[in-house]
Image 1 (tube, helix red, strand yellow):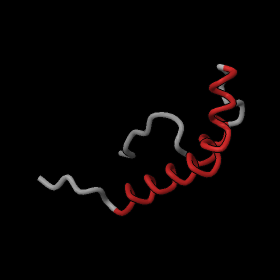
Image 2 (cartoon, helix red, strand yellow):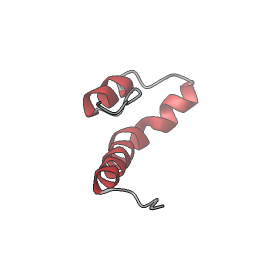
Image 3 (cartoon, helix red, strand yellow):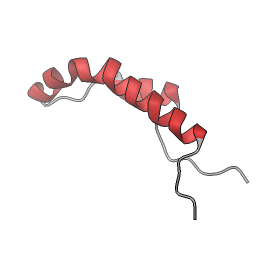
Length: 58
């Protein structure tokens, strides 16, 4: 059984990592200190297509 990630999975991993590093990491300490959610993060994740459960197309 091959457990290696596909190129598509690797691209998704890079996209999520880039998003977290560039957009979330710079502001996370302040929102964590205030114990508040980041208001725009869910909207941005939705636009990137990384929010929600994905089911295979049949």
